[in-house]
Image (cartoon, rainbow, N blue to C red):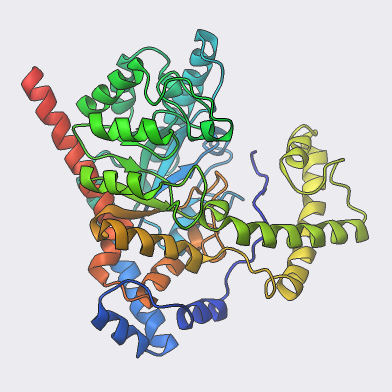
Length: 459
């Protein structure tokens, strides 16, 4: 929804809270000497150390959704949009690389649905190209390889990379895998929230209804094509069976572009230990996702319910009507989107007044008794997967503008807080560099090397 802020109520961390997060927390995996060194630091020294590391490593987030309306001359990522990712926010938070996502929702498995999804995908590919080639080429460049990433960062620019969420958009035309690679795609998932023509989705767990029993025959062909053209296979949304089959079939490492550990939070979008270990053995990488309900669902529900009650109370006291909806959820924002622009802007201004007033009360009345899911909860998943899989197989993602974000990392401007929490837990600079980008770029290199080998032996 262009220009509308529809994220859950979360307050941005102040420096004081940042220092509090730095000072508190449980022991976590990390080198013993490093843990000892960081525990001996003052708060100011810890922040200074983290700042230095944050500036030296390449920070990379593998999943940021986009709206094509934000890639025009009149409205784009050079501006202070309400989106969680913009160039000013990346610059403020020290986020170097954003994987902008070519997402298409699941529709009917027929030619009309495939054609519509393909058109949507091409519009998003074109939008990303406009940003990097026409709108702001002096501030951001498109990377196709790890060398491109390092070169663009060395030039003082931000980096865009492209991932495809939902292979549904290729329809039944396998040649579109090569086309998407040529347009810049460097990962793709075979399904989203709904069974595609290529693979079953994790959502089959809701009713135990499956379409393929994992991958379809076409999906198996697409796995081979992705290997051939250097596109990483993303296992974040398909079913467990589809993921295990993809891993077994792939000649190259796979990734999960935005998933966390199911052992810590039992959600079908998270990966259980069997899948995590299969990805490790495949040489792949899991990009831990900062999505509240995937990180800690009970904690998120408690905070959301308490916050929602205050929001409704404040709205009533200020005479604000949520357009017949029971709060600031999907129905409310859909209703707002349908309004004429002038009326929508007026309603949004009123909503923001209500939101600001509610946030003050939430901070005073809710956060102590029902705290929001925060950076520390997020890094718990990193710790778990590092312990299980090893440091070489774990990375970081946000799912910004797709529902992601936690207290302390609620948009790209707060990216430093993740590094600070990693330093507090004793991760070394080398390890933090691996988590932020080294592991993912290594996997991309290996996928592209496999593609070159396949093309050489076939050609």
